[in-house]
Amino acid sequence: MSQQPVIAFIGAGNMARAIIGGLLENGFAASSIWAAEPDAARLEDLAAQGLNTTTDNQAAVAAADIVVLAVKPQIMKTVVNALAGAAQTHRPLFVSIAAGISLDALDRWLGGDAAVVRCMPNTPSLVQTGASGLFANARVSDLQREQATQVLEAVGVALWVQTEAELDIVTAISGSGPAYYFLMMEAMTAAGTRLGLSEETARGLTLQTALGAARMASSSDVDPTELRRRVTSPNGTTERAIKTFQAEGLEAMVEKAMTACRDRAVEMA
Ligand code: NAD
Image 1 (cartoon, rainbow, N blue to C red):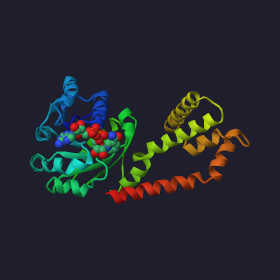
Image 2 (image 1 turned 90 degrees about the horizontal axis):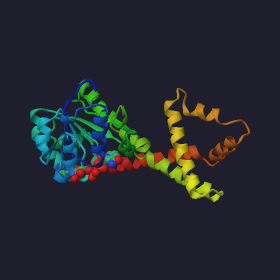
Image 3 (image 1 turned 120 degrees about the horizontal axis):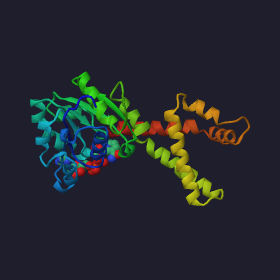
Image 4 (image 1 turned 60 degrees about the vertical axis):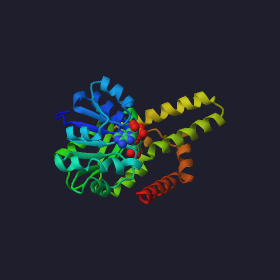
């Protein structure tokens, strides 16, 4: 990372640890990272890695250029309200990774004058292959946008969207998307087993195929449509399967499912 701002994590749970792990792997200095948690025992391993740790959220915020809000959505208001003083004095960038909490609410809870980025990460961030959508309020500077990108890129891909409402579409693609692929894996494993393979073999082949297809698609310079065309010989086996998916309405079903997901995200906000 070219510049090393001081980053404080408020809440040192799964998601914060994933991002911290990614930052350290990317050469970010442990001494530039703070982790704040009420549960001191959960901070011990982070302190052993050289991070600054504290049970006092305000102390961490006071030291930071970037504050990553990584507590559960239900307690966000209480946690953030207590940080409003610090937000008014040295004005760090706040990055919220909590699902369903609007920029407006965060800004209000921080005293009404804060630079805030709202981010929608996903669970593969825990294995450093996450996909995050980000949106900033008007007080976030270009440098701060770059810094927020660097933080989220530590655990995968980070893409900015044009409006806050687009974060609900991000939820429908990448936020909830891992579960769609898990469902496909379940269905392929079950079908392979019903067709006669052992469950272990069907699952092993399914998972490796998902990984291989994802690697090929993300490393290729052609799009998935072209990759599919290349493995679909006329009148061959793959074509027979693809035609069956299409005849059964797979594309329309995916759109319907994602629309339902987006609508639920809007409802919950
Ligand atoms: P988690 O429960 O693992 O971590 C939350 C941490 O906050 C815990 O360690 C808890 O002790 C700590 N905490 C509790 N009260 C606190 C307080 N007053 N001050 C500071 N810390 C406090 O949860 P997580 O899975 O890491 O999720 C964190 C956030 O990330 C949530 O808002 C969630 O919506 C969001 N998120 C998570 C995922 C995911 O894959 N886990 C994906 C997308 C978004």
